Length: 238
Image (cartoon, rainbow, N blue to C red; front, side, top):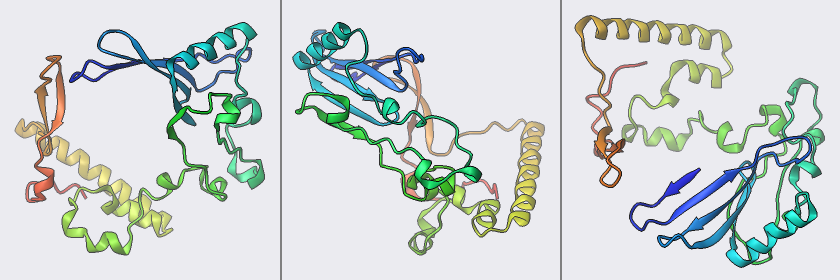
């Protein structure tokens, strides 16, 4: 993967390691930050599902050489520590202590002590096994709190938290949720048929398709209309 900052020509080149039972490099990645003059500035290392580190280039090169010298990975991977970390888990037949928690650290990865942590996943909650091993962020996606209710006028009517089937599901009313879901699907089909009949084309409200100033490629950019918070043109989708 190559990620380019077109304003200063600095780029990141990242290699996602293929996994096999012999290499045990599941989720592992390595890469470099490359300057505009094609000089390597920093090393990148980690696990895309766990943590990402930035490393001094000289120390990183020495680190990689040590790996090659050993013939195997020089790190003790979270997967080696927790062999079940990526296995499918049946939440109906699992004890909470069986749910693996991956918490990589500098010591676990054997990285130089002055490595910079760019990102690290938030540890799972103790009761995550009861919620399909979701993260707290995922668990809270459909929450509709009292604070949210006070901000209702500032939210578009198309916010997915307003979906009646989701609200019924969050309230534990499975039957009504199924009925609402079916109603919404039929409403969506009817809307699509009406648009096709009138030859109306859908136009995004808050994004515009434009050409990138540097690459010339077409990309979707915010047109800033969302922040005007005028919801009059929002479709009635619920």
